Image 1: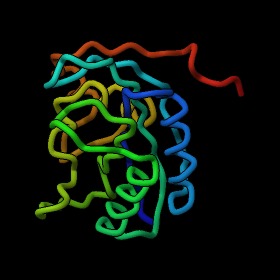
Image 2: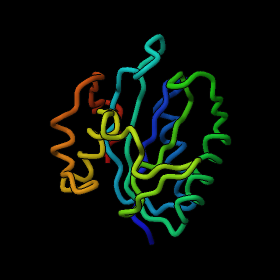
Image 3: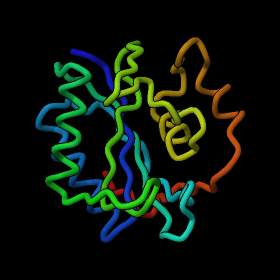
Image 4: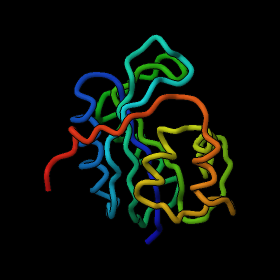
Length: 162
C-alpha cells in the first residue's frame, strides 16, 4: 500500500456535504487514516466567487499515481464538476498532493502538487494531520511559516461529534 495525501475542496452548493460525499467515494479505493478539520478559505486567483471549504486526507492505496488520478477525476465527474475558468468556482476538486516520496512530472500529473507549497488551504490542514511531515527535504512547519496570502479559518462548528 502507498501512503497518499489528497486535498479536497469546493465552493458551490452544500460544500460540506460535497466534501463528505467525495470522502465516501474515495473510500472505494483509498483506506483513509486521517482527515483534517474543515477550513474556510479565501479564493486564490479569481476572487469574484464564494470562499472555499477545504480538507486534507491521509490514506493508503494500491493504485499507481496515474490510476489514482483517473479515480479522483472519475469522482469529480460523478459529482458533476464542470471546469469553467482557471481557479474558478467548483462543486468539488480532488487533488493528489503527495504519493509516498514519489516525484513525478508528466503532462497530466505532477507530484508533489506543484502549487501546494504556496497554498494555506493545503498546508494548514496538512500540517494538522501530519505535523512531522517532510516534503522534498523541507519540514512542513518551515513551509507553513513562510506562507503569505489567502485568509483561512478553521470551521470547528462543521465537524461532526465523535
